[in-house]
Length: 143
Image 1 (cartoon, one colour):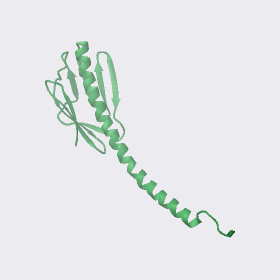
Image 2 (cartoon, helix red, strand yellow):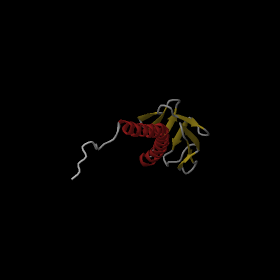
Image 3 (tube, helix red, strand yellow):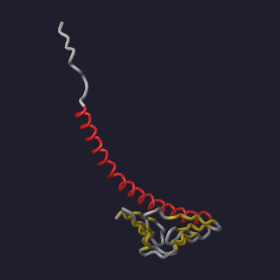
Image 4 (cartoon, one colour):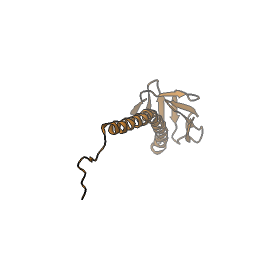
């Protein structure tokens, strides 16, 4: 029976350092791509929230048989439903531009908007929200 006493099992310091340096390079590459992906998600969520708020305002006008409106300001927009005012501040780094829509969007008792037009939500990505005159339908499109 031959037993070798000098044979050791394991990794050398050089091998361990090489593996750790490769792993750290891969982690840095992955985490540097995450912030833009997060920023795109924030813009998409802001556009979705605005679309949902427009539809909520329209549906509330129909169900309560009263006029409702959305007022657009530089740093926020407001939903005005009867005596209730809901403020929605814009997220940091995002802007909302009124392309062809005025600074207010009103819905009558039947849910018809007073005007149609486009709103642009900008950040790292750009989304256009279109409100159609007459039907009040809302469409979101990524640019």
